[in-house]
Length: 201
Image 1 (cartoon, one colour):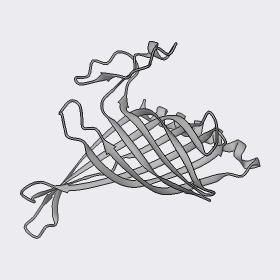
Image 2 (cartoon, rainbow, N blue to C red):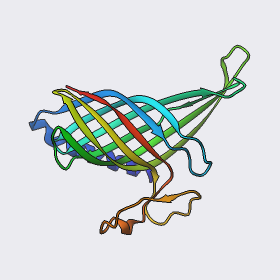
Image 3 (cartoon, helix red, strand yellow):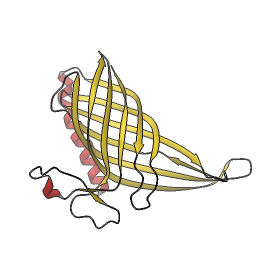
């Protein structure tokens, strides 16, 4: 199921890229900072990540984004190190383009956590891996500050599910009574703010 979903996402991105062959296509690269709300099921505290983003403009209204974040920390005793490397692939849709351009977006995320058991010398003697996969939805805006540079910020719901969720800690996504959208009964487990800068060339 996940493999088919990823394939569909990349096919959609490819379809958006094909018309760009006849136009100028821009690619944006830059830093990204994320503030992630903790796991609702474990009441984990919010965390901060640093990373980077790659934004490929396929049309005036469509952008395909791949973002990688990173975070590492040690336990109090210094005997265990945890490394987290979430990757998100998203399709961003811009209703209108200008100096200030709002967008909605969604996609899939791959969230990998590595736990290293450290030896007396500080080296890893054993590593365990945990990986989660989930959809995300959100909205944001991009602000052009120079001819080839833009600031952006958005808010995303993580681990989004369609239909009534039975997962403990899941929360409904507010739809504001939008016709059709409220019938999907969207729920999520956690959310995040992201901000950063993209340099286009």
